[in-house]
Length: 425
Image (cartoon, rainbow, N blue to C red; front, side, top):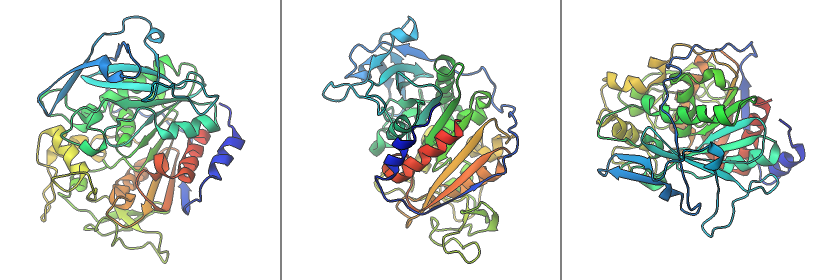
C-alpha cells in the first residue's frame, strides 16, 4: 500500500481540528485469537443481478408482516462475480466516481441470511478496507471511503444494507442488518453473522494476497467487531478501527437494568471509580486535576433526539426489536436479565488477544443529550479496550460528537483515516 502524503495533508488543512489525546497499548507481539465463534458456520452470500444501476432496490424481492422483512434476489446471479458487478450512479444516472483517479465506483448486490445488502467498491487498490456505517448501516458509499481513497492506494469497500424494517431506526434509513427475517426472536450476536459473511466474502474475492481491515462507526462497530469475536474472523483481519462503539460490553448496563461504578479514565484508559448513575456523562467525576479527563463507566445509553424511540433510546429499541422482548428497559432497582447476555461481549468472549492492531476513537465532551460518546457507550468502549491483550490504540477527541470522526467533521475524519493507513502498513 502506498500513502499519498500530499493529499492527506491537504485534507487536514480544510478544517480546524478539535483537541484530542491518544494512548497506545504496549506494542507486544500480536497473538492470533482462538475464535469464540465457529469458523466456517457463516451463511452464504447469494449475488443478485442488477438490471438498472439507478434502481438497485429492484434487484431484490421481499416479504414482510410489517415487522420482519425477508429478502431474496429477484434474479440470482449465477455466473462469475465479475459478471454481477455494476457501476454506481447517482439519482440523475451519472456515474459516482472515486476520489482517486475519478474511476467509476463499482457495486455488487447480494442477499445473506434473508437480508439484502451491497458492496460499493473501488475498481483499483491493493490492501482492502471494509467500512460499515452506524444505525442499520443503510448507506450506499460511505464518506469515510473517499478520505482513504485520496490519501492511499487502499481498495475501499462500503458494506451497506437495504432499509429493511421501519419498526426501528425509521429516521435513520431503517433497521438494515438488524432486521429480523421472520417472527422468531434472535440476538445481536446471531445477526452479526450477516456482516461476518460479507466480510469473509471480501477476503475470499478481493483480499487474497493482501491485508484486510475494517472501519465501523457506532452500531457499525457491533457489526465489524462482532464479526471478529463471535464468528471466527480474527485470522483474516489485519486491522480494525472502531469509532464510537461498540456499546455492547454489557447490554444489561446499556439498557439501564443494572449499574456499576467500575470505570476508566477517558484520556488514558486507566482504572477509576465512576458514577454508576451517570446522567449521560454530564456528572462523571474527573480523573485527577484535569477537567477533560473523566471517569467513564459502562452505563445507560442516552436518548437520541429525533430517534422516535418509545423507550428512551435507539439502543433500547434495537435490543427489544431483535429479541422480540421488553427486557431492555430502565429500572430503578437493579435486576439483571440473563437473556441480554447473549449479545454482551463481557459474557460471551473468552479470548481477548487478537491478530493485528485495533484502534478506538471516541468523540466526547459535548453536552448530553444530544449524542456525544460519553452518553453513547464510551464506558463500554473503554471496558472493551481494557480487556484486549494485544496491540491497540485509544484516541479521545474533546468537544466532538458521536460519529464526527466517520462522516461529519473533515479534520476528524482525516485523522481517523490516518490511523487506518498506518494500521494497514
